[in-house]
Structure formats: C-alpha cells, structure tokens
Image (cartoon, rainbow, N blue to C red; front, side, top):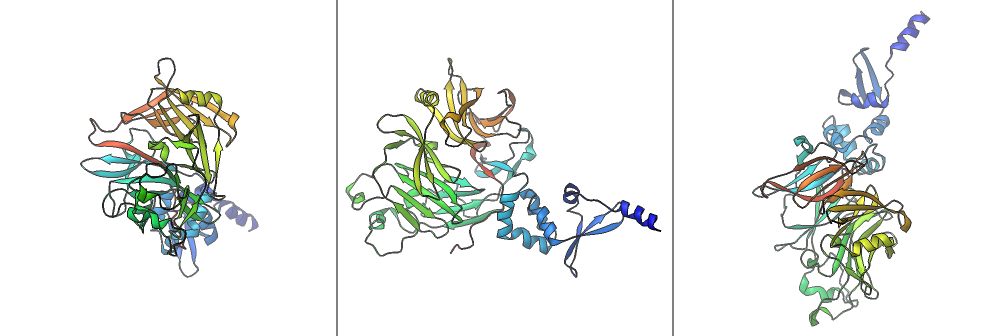
Length: 435
C-alpha cells in the first residue's frame, strides 16, 4: 500500500515557473474557495494556485500578455488594473520589452509601434496604436520616460495643452495650459496672489531660446516637465518681471516651481538637441559654452533640482568640433554620442558610449558604421545597433559593425514611416493624487 502511494506521489505534477506560465491560459476560477485552478491534463489532476502565487507569476509577464489576460476573469482584471500591480510590474518584470513609435503617412497620419528585435521584413512586428480621441497630428513630443509620453499641441485654439499618453495600455490624460502668451508678464509677478497652474501656451508654439524635457521624480512619485530658458525674449512687453531660468511643472498638481539665477553660460543647439534625455533621475542636453564654443552635456537632477555638467573626452570634443551633425542619445542604458561624417571620406558614422555614468574616461568609441547619416535608435539584445538614415531606411548591424539587414518603408514619400521615439512597454498610468 505504501509503495502504491509512493508511486502515485511520484506521478504528481512538479510544475516549475515556466510550465506554470505556459499553462496560464488553461485556467478556471473556483469562486467558492477563491482559488485559481490549473488543469494537469496528463495526470487528470487539478492543481490549485494561491492568489499570491498567481500575482507573483503575472507580475513577471510581458505587458501584451497581461493585457490579454485581463479577460480571463474578474479577479485578474482587477489585479492587472491595479496601480500598485503596475508599479510592481515595472520594477520586477523579468524581461522588459522595448519598442519604438513611428508616424505613418498614408493620406493622413497613423501612429504605429515596431518591435525592433524582430526581422525588419516581418509585417507582424508593426502594430497600429489607438491614439487619444482628440489627437491632432500637429504635436510636439516633449519626451518620454517609464513608458509614458508627454505631447504638446502646437496648433489651433488649444495650442500649448499637454497630453500624457501611455501607448502600451492607451491611458491618456489632457492637461490644459491655464494662461496665454499675452499674460506671461503677470505670470512671473512674484507679488501676485493668484494660484499659478499650468504652463505658458508658448511651450507648444514658441520654444526658441528653450530646452525642455520630461522625466520622473521618484522621491515624490511625480512626472515633471522641465524648461530651461537660455535667452531673454525681446520686446518691452516681455521684460517687465524677472524671468526664472528654470521652470519645473508637476504633472501631478499642474503647478510649476521656478528656479532663478544668472543667465546661462551655454548656447542651445536647437532641433533635436532641445529635447532632454532622461537617465539616472536626470535630464540631459548637449549644449555649447558661449565663451569657447566647446560642447558639454548639462544634466538637471529632478530630485535635487540642481544643474551640473558632464564633460566629454578631448578626443570626442575635438570630433564634435569638426562635424556638422551629431546627436546625444541614450544607448544601452548609457549616454551615447552619434557622430556623423567621420573619416577621410566623411562617409562613416561613429558611436561613442559613456560606459560609466559621469566618468569622463569611460567614453569609448563602440561602433564605426558605414553611412554619413546613420542615426542609432537603440542597441539590440545581441549587442548590435539598430537605427535609420535620412532616406527612411532602417538598418541593423551586429556587434562587429557588419550590416545584418535593412528595409525601406514606403516609396517616394508615399505610405512612408517617420521615426518617432523609443519607449518601454508598461502598465503605468499617473499618480492617483492627480486632481
């Protein structure tokens, strides 16, 4: 008898985590005992999984799987929709997935998302995204962090309004600018007793003389829009009051804070360089010194609310000084610099990486790639690099700089794809304290 029981014991399923995950779809819910049941088809047994184990498994699954699993039962819908679960998933996800957005021009505008780890010729790697219903194709991407984008409307009566959007779960929220361009002077009147909220509408229209960025302050669980003012606006109507050098808008409260000081000793580069890159709780911009014209990276710490410099190596600084095209990027979790038009024939692109944050000597040239206009988007899991060129051709290179594959979307600017921005897939929304 004991021997038979032992044999039966040996036949009982010994499910590991991988097997449990693969069986998650084949589940039923015991409402009376409030337990999830998993079918062991081979041995005709039912294995009950406690709720805490279910949560432990789910929190490590990809976002797209979790969005499908919301329909399994009400219990899973409630769990996966919980804001605390979303935060835990962001911190504990076993294999975070990253994608990048592209704008498709096809008689109009469509926003799509591309899996850059898949083959460039795999049509299933591109999926359509549901954009907020008040979508206006004329918008400025102020930045993204933690899978959430901040967009500014740049035309029409609502110019300056912001849209917070998570492309992974379609979450969105609109933040209205609460004062207009003509009221800017009174906004900065320190003697005013008005409750200051929102941002100037010129954030979406007149960003000349500014750099900006979007990031996350973990100490306050708050997303922040940061604007650095490099030049004073011309005109007597714009000089009545002292202007802050730095404005920080809390997305949670829609209330800005101001940092005053001497005029910056830097010159902004404009274009793509105006948008700050979020890394290590700071926003980063590539700028030049006014006095010398040399390049330097400035970083604004969102927790400490302080501005500092990150210097380049002499070799990298010299290379930038000889080029007309260069781009500060975040690559592989590090600051990176793309230098276009290097070499004797100026037909190459060099990619530098700061392998240790704020350690000047750790700047290393990691890639030299063919093409004078290649723009890296990200490093791949295999150690290579993925990016595009000015002809809208996307390319993948291996870790030795050899071309693996390329693909051009659209012909003669019809049905074309435009590069947008990288993002991590998350379930995050915004802090619950929002008004």
